[in-house]
Length: 287
Image 1 (cartoon, rainbow, N blue to C red):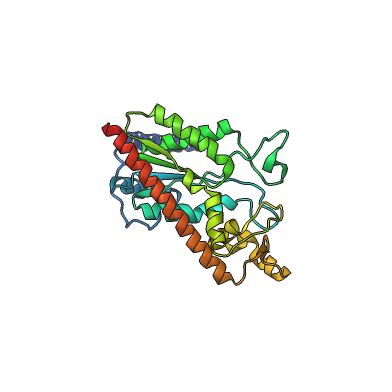
Image 2 (tube, rainbow, N blue to C red; image 1 turned 90 degrees about the vertical axis):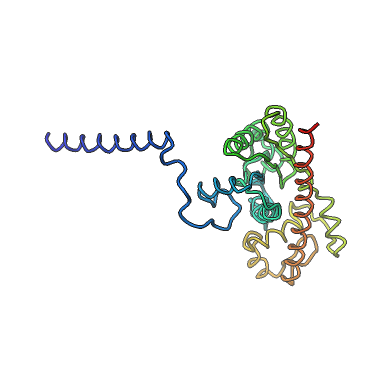
């Protein structure tokens, strides 16, 4: 009995200490201490400490990119996270080139087709889909969280076609909801411009003969920049056919060079579009 009472007392004391600490934290005593170490070199919020995010915002990084990808079937060779993998490369480049931006965690769950009965990509194992309503609500709460922390320009980009409708709808919705609050949401359709990227590749001699599979040179090459395993490079080379839609991916150095140039081209266009949207939003205030 005595032992049980001692154990209970210890538990109560521990809980009291936790509650006391929580109360002090809520009062602000521990909320804003100085950052004890230098800033880590990353633009990805999920790879930063909360102090690094706080200080980045204070130092002028008040633009945040919300990238949306997807989990879907991409043929026999490309990982289901194709769009998310590509966004690791492109969103990093965009944020660094902007100079005043961070990147929110990549949103990997997007509309991919009806769940029951399954349509579009949902007919293939591994695909995960959201309804458009859920997708837009998810993004709205992400954007609202970022707004609370002090970001003033929230940029929406989508690496997949089915994302575009929801991104546009959310930008319009929040523009109305947040009017006059000094926070702006920018949907950037220029990021997702497949005809433009295809034309750019064709001018460099990349002409594909589609085989009916959900893969292509552009996505494969960009994924190679991030993770060769995501396109099953070793297995395909061992099998004796490292090509896509009739285009040989070897020599690897050539494909990677094209991918880097393409990523830069897409980044330049996207950054230019973002800067134009931000400038236009400020001009609208002055009218």
